[in-house]
Length: 242
Image 1 (cartoon, rainbow, N blue to C red):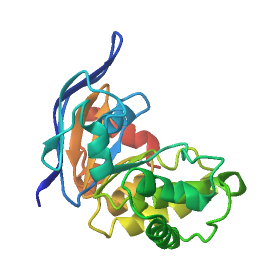
Image 2: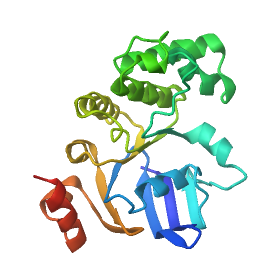
Image 3: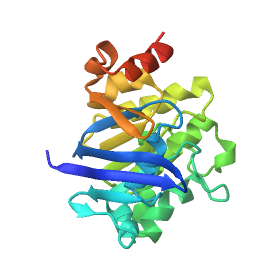
C-alpha cells in the first residue's frame, strides 16, 4: 500500500511550551491508526497539525505524496482529509442536511441536488433519517453521527477523528463507535485519537502511545494490550484497563 500520510521531524511549540517533540510517522493508505495516551501528551495537537488546523513549528507533513504547506493546506484539505471533532462543530442555524451539503457545494463545487443525494446516503450509513432537524433537536450521539456523515460526504480518502466520543454521555458512546467500526471495513485511512480501548483493539491496524510530546511505543493491538514494552505504556494501561 502507498503512504497516505508521512510525518517527518514534526515539532510544535505554543510559546515556550514544546507540545510535540520530533514526531516521525508513516500511515499507509487504508490503514486504521489509533493514537492513545494521557491528556496533555500532544495527541490532539498532532492530529490537528496533519490537516494544518495547527501550523507546525518545524518538520514536514506529506499527504498522498504532496507536502502540506501554509500556502496549499486548504486545497489539500478539500482534496484529501476531513475531520470529526470532539465537540461535533455542527452549524446550529443549519439543518442536518444543510450541514452535510455545505462543504461539497461550497468547497468542492458539487451540484446541489447531487450533494443532497450523497448526504442522504451518508446519513443512512450512520443510521439517521433526521435530515430536516436542527442540531439542537438531536442527542449528542446523533450529532456526532451527523458529524461523521459530514466527513463522509466529501468522499475524501483520509478521516481524522479527535476524541470523537469524549464529549458524549456514556450510553451514547457505543452508537458512535459502532458507526466507526463499520467505517473501518472500508478503504478509508483513519487516524483516531481516542480513550476507547475496546475500539482500539477491534479496529486498529496499529496503535501508537504518546506521552510528553513523543511517540513512546507503537505496535499491533495484540502487542499493545498484551505485551507492551515501555514502562510508561504499562503504567498507563494498568490504570485504564480493569
